[in-house]
Amino acid sequence: MKTVTLSGSLRANVGKVNATALRRSGHVPCVIYGAGEQIHFSTDERNFKNIIFTPNTNLVEIAVEGKTYKTVLQEAQYHKITDKLIHADFLLVDETKPVTVQIPVKTIGQSEGVKAGGKLVLKIRKIKVRGLVSKLPESIDLNIEKLSIGKSISIGDIQLEGLTLLHPKNISVISVQTTRNVVTEEAATPAKGAPAKAAPAKAAPAKK
Image 1 (cartoon, rainbow, N blue to C red):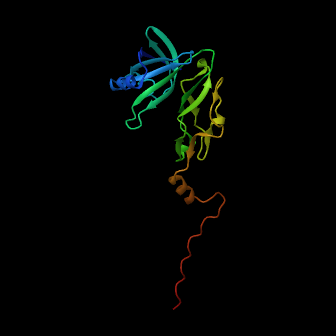
Image 2 (cartoon, one colour):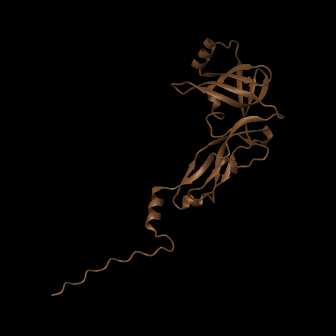
Image 3 (cartoon, rainbow, N blue to C red):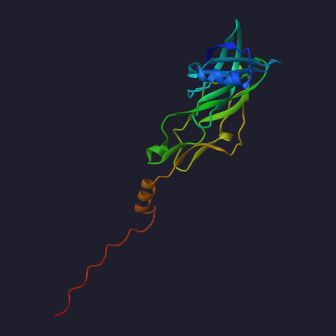
């Protein structure tokens, strides 16, 4: 998993008034927890470009007042109306303890079902996993080349060494669905072994 860097400044006050003033100036109030104490800081909202506004999940190395903390983003809060980022929580990473993160799903190849006219549907874009940081991949790569129409890949089909997938095993991650074109084509094609339709008989000429 890649590591991105982030720099911030300690917050002298952690009240609501201070948080509002920070947001008005284009900064986001944040907190680092997991080391027995909480570290409250703020950072420019533009620094979240490679943390939140990206399909990837990254480790975040945060520099605050001369100290560096290796973390993972645990929660991001957004304004209900404007959808702007208003707060972020980071969990301090311990190399010897498992963490919970969401890893993006990526597909490999083109499925047989899509070639036959089906539609590929990615139902879960990120899978929540738990494991040591050293075991976390940048993405969960699924080979879909043999996925035919009506078939799917579920959580139970995915095996990742050293990681626990935190979803029910029967949850579908990706599938190939039948489209209207496929249904029409199947209806127009006679089943194997079925007798072909006889051509309509011509009317006999009337007797004079």
